[in-house]
Image (cartoon, rainbow, N blue to C red; front, side, top):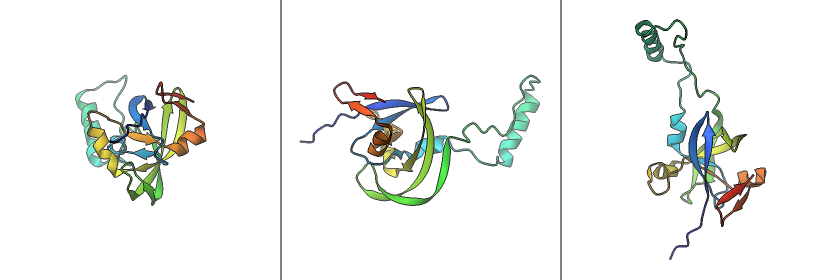
Length: 158
């Protein structure tokens, strides 16, 4: 019989958009699902196709007060890419080489900029109806920011 370990889920914000993250005391590292990273992908510089689509919108739906400016880099400062791959223990317990990135997010009105590893094994959690989350905050994060988890109430004191 497998013991269920309660793990709180929190709602973080990235650019004003809410995402569910798991606070997991059995994970050492912060992990991100690849689909979460893909959501924020923007092409820098903008492709010719994108520039032409903005030009077409401005020609066909002119608005002198607020023309559509191309390119619209909405998420340019969400991630700071880091070079290299590091072997880390992923959510599924397997040690794999994962690309690292620094994610800027907000929780309870406080801004964090933390190192995360992109974990391919988290893809199944992005589509799970029972337990859907986009990332994991691990023990390194909890210790660094002195977060205390009340497992009875599933609350975090930060």
